[in-house]
Length: 104
Image (cartoon, rainbow, N blue to C red; front, side):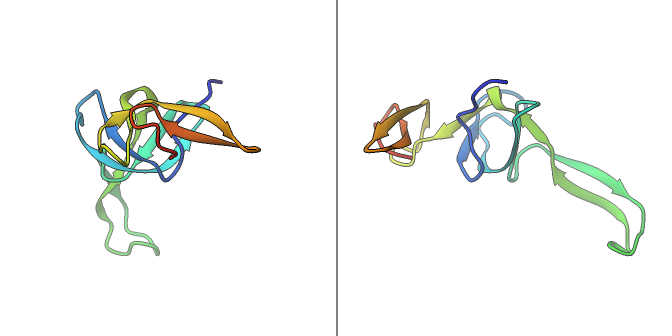
């Protein structure tokens, strides 16, 4: 299993695929499959039967997972895609943007 630099709550941009250029917040990360679910990106339609939870049934839109390699973290200062690094400040490890050198 590889070390992932994307975490839940990060703001990311899609850099490859059908949804290239879309931005959103990471809702969940699946470390075993190297995939993430990004809010408002890669929406799929799911047909549901009527049930107690949804008595109407019908078509429900939901986010599907996207490969980690196809998303990049957004630098809060420059608002552009950036790579991240890890450094030690005091006795704590922190992530930082390689473009602006700002702590994430």
